[in-house]
Amino acid sequence: MPPHASTAPCLTVTGLAKCYPPATVFQGVSLTLQPGECVAVLGESGVGKSTLLNCLAGLDVADEGSVTLAGRSWATMNDAQAAAWRRQHLGFVFQAFHVLPHLTLAQNVGLPLMLLGRPDADRA
Image 1: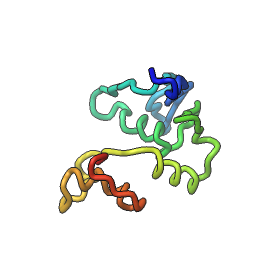
Image 2 (image 1 turned 60 degrees about the vertical axis):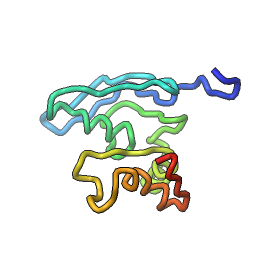
Image 3 (image 1 turned 120 degrees about the vertical axis):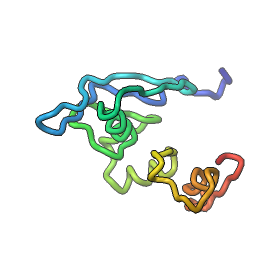
Image 4 (image 1 turned 180 degrees about the vertical axis):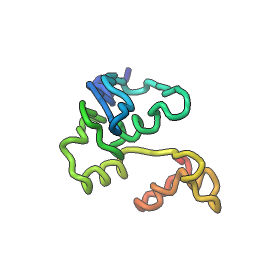
């Protein structure tokens, strides 16, 4: 590992739970991811994968637990701060209905960078 690389986890999730009464979508989710780790979330349709990812990304609020992403907890940010932080630090690839059909794949992926005034075709 390079000397400047951080050994701090990039994601820490503790006791995460989400309910839509009367159903519990998930509960007791805890995990820690280090920089460079790759994780797949697998499961049948309707088991809560998208809800979990939305909670991890701060797009939805969990009913219990905490999420710390790159040293920031969603609980410490209001909606505007969370949106600004996501815009600067996260990338999303949504399911097919969220892409703009008149753009290429690279253009869809690079759109947030363009909107930030930092187009980067190589990164996209």
